Length: 242
Image 1: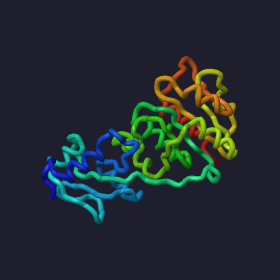
Image 2: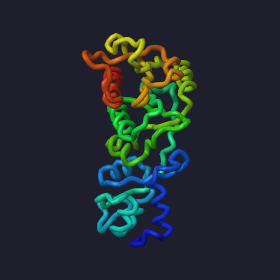
Image 3: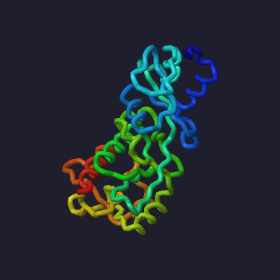
Image 4: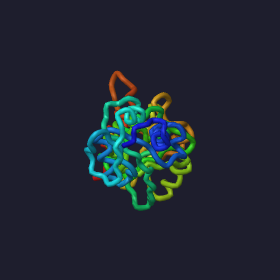
């Protein structure tokens, strides 16, 4: 059993649970039985940590004290945690039909929820900007994605360049905007579509939207704004593959 929070192993584990340097860090930490099970099933877990008895079947499981678990999970009441390796995904847009693009979202809960909707609505991959975004592999993102984060490619690229490349592969790129946009119901679903969602405060940037083929908005009366994750669920369901 690992009992000390000052030992080398506990300190190394703690780094995986911290959000800093997540873009360059290869490992990340999660906790909670349901989320850990999803990660184990996805084949990305390197170590399982548990208190008293391990509720997850995994060969490389390490018993830790309650003090160590609290240290790693910031005082949660969970009894199991895991150190995961960021999955390396080889993707080919030529074989894809639905791609989600998230332009500089600020909150993990929104990224996680959108990942969940994207997975349920048949998306093949989710792209984030390569110049900074909120941590998509944090605990809040993992929980709000309900584990689907581990089963869907999450990639980083320069978004305007990505959109141009996708259009060259036959994708119709749809931006979401409140300005100069067609009603969602007037835009037909296509075989290959990339859907762009902007951040919670300002929406997608002009640099990104100007690369889109068409802009859409959700028709609503007496209200003109929705939380980005709710809007994403509506739009992704509308354009889900048939």
